[in-house]
Image 1 (cartoon, helix red, strand yellow):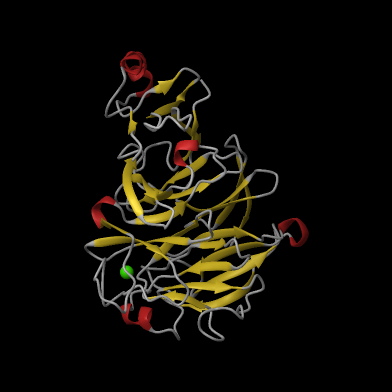
Image 2 (cartoon, rainbow, N blue to C red; image 1 turned 180 degrees about the horizontal axis):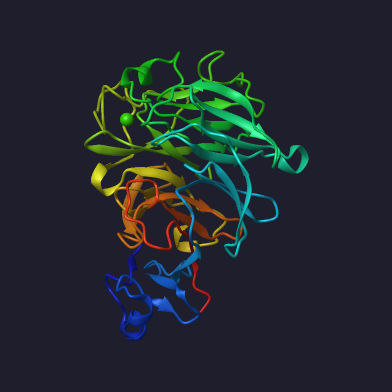
Length: 382
Ligand SMILES: [Ca+2]
């Protein structure tokens, strides 16, 4: 397992010096600012014992401040991000250097955990210019698609809605299909009902139709028995992993198989019962409560390539899981632990960096004056 650590925990001598100099400017001992800006901090990494990877320091930069509960993100071909804000319904355009501009508002009627949630870009965006969003109305959660500036046209409606457990994850898989994650909307038994859209991972064609190779005929359900899934990410082989909120004991990371039953509400965490697929990793809800997830690729951050990252709300940290070639978890590590408050999402930007969203203005946090923020994690240039 890689020996990666936070400077705040085990500061190397040189960094202790820098830290001492910068405490006044930063007002915190949680990290060390780098030389090139007081808004940058460092996460120290060291190479594998094999020395095969040129692993170096990871720098944490505050890219954007002043957001309000940012939730979903996707990237346009020009490198700008589209970012949703859950409660304002704003769709923002964020440049690679963190400047923000409101594109439009998606009318939504959510309260609590509902609102404007996931956003995804058509895999054929250059040609069709479609953006997809998951949002809450007065009567349901739904997925709509639209061209920027236009009103969304619903392609999937009737996802059960509640103040809690509204799911909201949205992403195109490597197979070109749209995956949608839903919550049980407070009615746990529906997670086991393949005729209900709640407590599921759904798989749709880009036009909202049901793919012929879905596991259940004429049914958007791809996997079921979920409590509240929000994060989804695929590894290099095309295997889907999701993050899932547990109830009182165990949050889960699940490796998704078509047609699989993940146990809720019969089982929370690993039950070991043959009819249910156990999670590949569980967490105490106090250290996770996980939302968005990402698996960085393309060796942009060599020591993190292919690892599963998951933003934790209540846990206020970024979890990194080592996955082996079979998709089993072989190690885990908490990053940014307690340093930035509640974390909602993480996504890899086109330049390879990992963006992380805080969620201290979602009604459950203690926002600082800069919240909410987008953090950018990338190899140190120095
Ligand atoms: Ca489960």
